Length: 389
Image 1 (cartoon, rainbow, N blue to C red):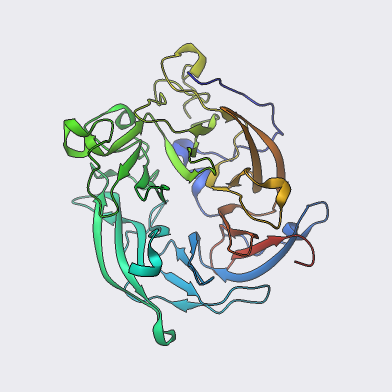
Image 2 (image 1 turned 180 degrees about the horizontal axis):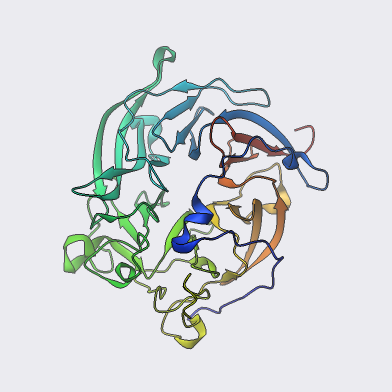
């Protein structure tokens, strides 16, 4: 069992409401000026504005795709230190928009140069008042400056669809061996995180076409159970591979207890049986140390940071940060750097960005790119780099 570290942290307001919607709902505030405040080890360059941006992915040619939660997919053909040109991508899916739902993550296939495959996650409506996340893939065509997504097909669905509009998670990342990992939130229903007949509250491992690898830990059980890589999770909004090939994720705790976890094959992380936070109605949840059979987080935050995303830095612009994890913070309005030493981790630095940070990515230029969580063209794309670079 891995060691558990609970760090004493700055007293950021939790900004949580019952059911977790408070930390996730867009704040609707305008463009920030605090992100350019002195005292940060990087210069901040605004590059573009978006409506409720959720995710971004860089293409091999240096261009990028950005998702907006209401359903728009946007291509940025050229990115630098000047304002970017935005081109809408046709062929994006129809989404069930509302609450925390809509168009979510975007990722490119490891062999994108050959097959031009783009993966999207979004929320679709079910029967009655139910909904669930899905993942689809299609071929991106950008010739002629009129980008489009061709042949979009759904290759995975959350099971089961349930009522509510929270905790979809639906982050996508490809492993070094080309397998696809997904996060599937427990949809604010608690018990599904421990239910092996559902893929809610889990980290999932699939082939790039949505089929199940034969070497998954529960593959012999069939059905959605075969998809499961780890279980006992809440709302998993960050997923990334470290340079050493190990998989990490961050997730929102309930009232307190945000987590940073190293994801291990077949492991149970305990939610909702254990958590370092409590229920919003005040009921206690036993802490991780009381049930050592469950996998405890490497870092836990109370007060919460409301983690939104995760990236490991490997670039050249900030050589002192190579190998560090970077987490975007929503209620904390922060960019958080975490260092890892073997099986232990700790928060190393935190910068107040003045706005909720929805996404953090490393660009091909070695800069750190972040998306603010604003609506009505208030969600800025920012490039963070050393002054003059």
